Image 1: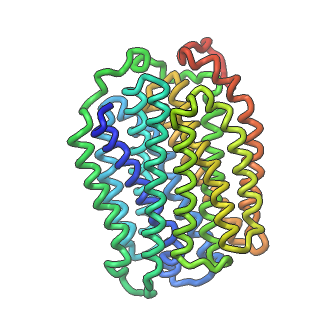
Image 2: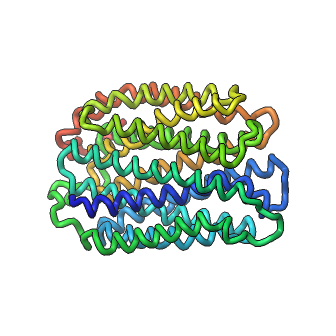
Amino acid sequence: MSSRVLGALLASSFIVALGYGIVLPVLPTMVERLAGSRDPTFAARHIGFLTAAYVAAPLAVAFLWGRVSDVVGRRPILVVGLIGFAVTLAASALAPNLLLLYVGRILNGGFAAAVVPAALAFIAETEGDDDRRARTFGWVSMASIAGFLLGPMLGGLAAGWAFDSGKAVPLLQAAPFLLASGLALAAAGGVRLILPGGLVSGQPVDTRNRETTTFVPGELRLLALASVAAAGLGAFEVGLTLRNDELAMSPAELGFTFATCSVVMFAVQGLVFSPLVKPAATKVLVAPAFLVMAIGLAVSPSITAFSEMLFAVSVVAASAGVISPLLAFWVSRITARSQGVELGIQAAAVSLGLSVGSAGAGLLFGFNGLQGAGFLAAALVMALAATASLKLPRLIAPVTADPRAVPAGRIPE
């Protein structure tokens, strides 16, 4: 893979994450302004549902994006996804009411679902060596984290400007959204010019001819764990946003908190996907990472200071930074399907987890006395996931040499 092609893929992943992260610090103020209500219960539920609306959209379309990209190639899907993402992001920034904000977030998430799975599928088809594929998967994840790092910072600045109730959003307040929208359009142009059109000519025969209905041992467990990890992260993000008032954090401080999360994830992934760690050894890292994530979530309800919250954010971010890209890599490595279909399924599983975690946290925060229940419930699920992850090295080992070597009719774990 040339550096220009890799750069286009990394830029696409970065911009989609930027567009998502930029909204998080702004959502509380946007909901308050558009709904004309300062009721914290009302705001908590809508923030959870709006976040869930964005991340749930890929459930309906991620698999379809992957299947179509197997037929027409990765470049057209990346271009369409980026253009659609740009248009719907700009529309969300200028939404005049809550209903249109919901519509914008759903469409925005649906188009975003086309980008990262198509980029990862392109990498999986062009990087045959495990070491290079693992590192490149890590770079895509790190690019997404970098976007998530910058997005909340810009969103925090936007939220710091006064949102006058009942008035149109000033151009300055919409500027970060429009900036991300413009970058997405520029990335679409770059992908169109740089990436090869059609199907990858060098795609290995054993990848092109894989069956589309066979699950290999460990695959369902990997997908379930990816969904569970996403649920924990979604619950933590929404819970952190909703604890903003309780901790007396300014929008800028909330943006800095999300930025800290991104920096930690970036650093951890830089280590895990460095030449110092062999891809085959990463199977054993998933269970400890889930356990660490459970600890970070469990202590979050008792935190009362901004500095303590930064510590909890760092713990959760470090574990999530290990879990998410590793599960995506191993799903791609062992699958008996085409890369587009499989990574579309994986994206849908992640979206399911994010939507459940985000909506659940929003609902629980809406009830007096249950504000910490979202964190604790997520911590319990992460602890159970750590136990389920202990079998991964044994389940994955038999299929890494030949992903198609699965007995007919066998139902894997």
